[in-house]
Amino acid sequence: MKLTDIYKAKNTQHKSVISLELFPPKTDVGIETIYQTVANLTNKPDFISVTYGAMGCHGRENKTLEIAEKIKKDYDIETMHHLTSINNNPQQITEILAQIKAKNVQNILALRGDVPAGVHQAELPHVYQYAHELIADIQKTGDFDIAAAIYPEGHVDSPLEVENIEHVKRKYDAGANFFISQLFFDNDKFLRLNDYVKNSGIEAPIAAGIMPVLQKSQAERMLFFGASLPTRLIKIINKYKESPEDLQKAGMAYACKQIDDLLARGVDGVHIYTMNKPFIANTMMDRYL
Image 1 (spheres, rainbow, N blue to C red):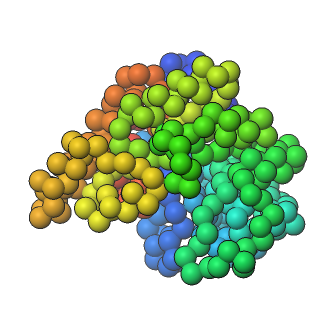
Image 2 (image 1 turned 45 degrees about the horizontal axis):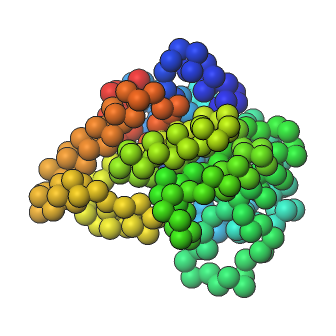
């Protein structure tokens, strides 16, 4: 099923789409844990997205596709395959799209991607400079729903505090059907961008990306993604920094408060970055579905 159909159905019911994100673990044991987590969910998310390896994944090594296919086929949950352009040329993209289509996965999150750690710029294809170029190539196949990223506080490589509407329009005009936001911890930043996009004439659903903060080191890493930490969240982290269990509870409570507020404001969707932690998936699905 195309994810835009899910958004349309939920919109008709005046409900928000609730989705989860997973990443391919490096071990077979980790992958089995993912499947066990999905199998044990009391309530199913509207869809699950699976991230793409930093250096890409081709042919039989495509764990992203392996996981996305199995979740859809065995657990009857629609899936979305992430795909980055920074590490692929057009021929490779065509091959990967054929593989994805053959496995009946119909949804793709198209991203430029970041330069992988330890890789020099000269080693990369340098064919696609922007995500909208990848989106245009995917759109030519006519077989996929295409999601694109949107940045409430601007892309980490951009000097802009908030995403320039022209960046969003390029992705939309190239064929993006809906958008998923980068994580954020201040709802006002997302809602400002959400209103800005809607008022610009772009008729596409926008999902808010939420990640619970469970450790102080995790919060510090979020700065790398360009997400600022509100004072109230910093105070929570400092208060419980010596008590991992309490910080985990407080971080989950903060994320739930964000989601409660977003749902009350009628956002199109909430996309939860689970970090492959079963208790995040279970807690969120029990609360919101």
